[in-house]
Length: 431
Image (tube, rainbow, N blue to C red; front, side, top):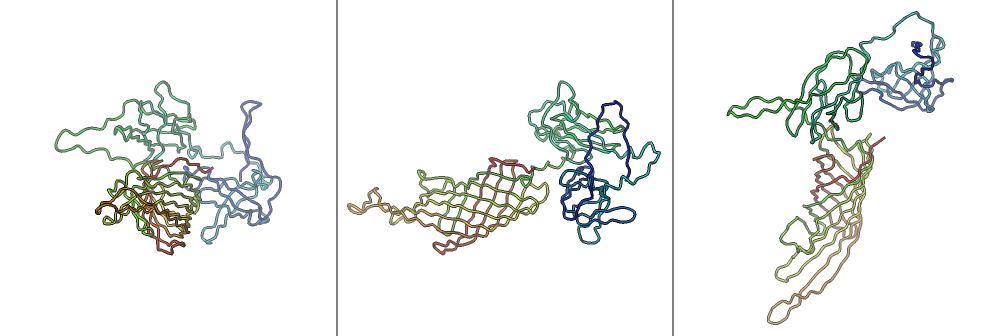
């Protein structure tokens, strides 16, 4: 531990600082660790745990906690539930196979001696704030920035009049170590690109602009095409598991359900166009991103009118409604555009069957007057589901879904297939 003082340039100058706890914490109290594990891009990572033990020794008092302290986070603060600093994180034991982490009790600062030292840090290791901005006029909003081959973001604003302030909205702002860096920007719509390098030498915020002369994508006019600059990796669509709640609607141009011996394909010639309704579904989903588990409530509706017997001229109409609850386990990779899942599902299914039979009249000629007979079947349908989703954009999604189970009202086995095009109506992000 090092306790140091800061010389004020002005008498009334103030420095923001965390409060220090006056008393030693107790076992079982909540604790939060804040640090920078592994990489500077993970700065200010927060983990929660408990005060597992207090080890008071002759040299110093140590706090044991199960709040995660990954390599690189040493020196960060350990807080209590009041926001007070109770310790400085020092180490973790990974070889033990348990979550064993330790911090020096903050009260130890009162036992420190004074050292006459002017500087106690390595200036070269202090990260520097860097703001990138673009002066190029573009209406596609798809200019992506890469620094040292790492994707940093997509520009949302363009500054053609004057340079913005450091960290201003519309810039891409990050922290980088001192030294030499390379940047590369790419516009997917036009193929235009920018590239360059820069060197950080001071602790002052660096503003770096992309000039108004992008490198144009060259068109080949000879049979032997010139080699092109390798296309950078496609920026990942925002992963939906960062969201807490999601409301979406989906259309099913292709649907099969063996339980009622019916199928629906958009544009089927056997369907009566006056009753043609594209099956649609409404989903409300709550995500638990830590375990990649979600709970989804859904509603589905279908209506068709198909001719099943040419000789008897018998029509069979179907109205199908389903109210369901799915518990899903999602399998996906970080920054992936697709995922697949398995789910346990319980549904309330209502099938309304509408039979129509024409009347037989003179000399075997059928009249177009019908007698209707309506039958309604309602029952529970436990299902095992599996499916996959492909994210076309941040809002559009193509999905495939298969369910296997049975209907408790008819005790008939169910096997259904759904191919859906979905649209995200609403999404609420996690805090």
